[in-house]
Image 1 (cartoon, rainbow, N blue to C red):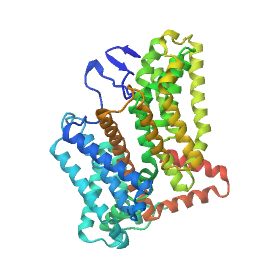
Image 2 (image 1 turned 90 degrees about the vertical axis):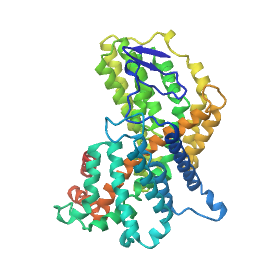
Image 3 (image 1 turned 120 degrees about the vertical axis):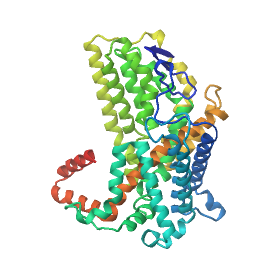
Image 4 (image 1 turned 120 degrees about the horizontal axis):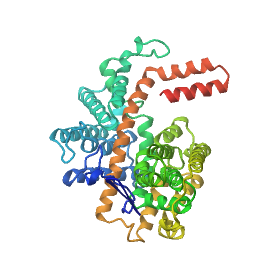
Length: 486
């Protein structure tokens, strides 16, 4: 299926099921560099190493040989695999070159990798000798260097505002005794703050990296595997075949496709790129105004991170933070997610009825039978994932098993088969997504670590409880308001 609109081109017939938008036929607009040669090989190699280490750790493979990978060493190794590539993927400034990697980015890449490998190699000593409190001079200095590199990585990956928050919370333990209640807390010296952030189990080694390295990584790999093998195109064609001919069909397709694909990718951006670049021009073609078409796709794609089974990283952090199985979080999210997408469907249907907007002609739409015949293995892999999570309760292992089955089944069709080049693309896209997520969660870890080590998080929670008293509904409203602000 190919739809042309204006000076840009939209093509859903790609092997990866992705969509590239090229204004006027030029290069794709992206904040990322397109890596080539040795730089791409380095990123792919690091990603393959990181995924391999995670599989070994999550499946306890080393225990069969009578050895183990110390947990702290594993988390530093995970950082080493996915944090340094940010300096290759993300240019320092918007006008920095996209077609080459400057020498200073290579230096930052190597320096970050070296610091993290050092801490991974000394993970056992770091914990049992309490380096977070009394580290020798060398690791303390390396910890300071690592924190500066992480701040720069967050600036490149998430922007200046997020960087400013990370910078503030990095030094918040030094300011905690001087702020007003309920945010007053225990204070630390400069080097004490550096050690607790870089080597403490409440900051960089805290809950966010634990969630990502122990649970979330498999789901991310599964989502990328779905995309790279053509899952995006399958779910779009499936939505078109079901709703494309109905009243205001392309708008409903946008909602359904975003719900289906978003439930597996957990990413708003990839959802917009995969479904929106097809559905928005089609909505405009049948009569939806440009602003309305864009609004529909925005709302629908944003809801993808709320749709089980693969939601945004927050859902996994919730599961580990409050100590409940991820399945319970997913089940709790199912009803509000369905209500969310149902409300959007009702609105677009009402708009189509009011403005007499019809659907697409059946001749333009893919056949439901043919779509299912060509993509049944996507549904099977999805159901396998849900079954392993819900029935076997192997939450961390389930996505790896589902990904392996998906990649094996895609070998049955020439169009979806992963070869050498497409496998390298799969690893590069996995590395890019994990690099960005690892960097953002490293920044979040600094915030959580600052609030935890100073005792402010407990004081703030106590303050909310005291205001609410014993009224559960007031507590619910205060918690909701706090969540929105944060």
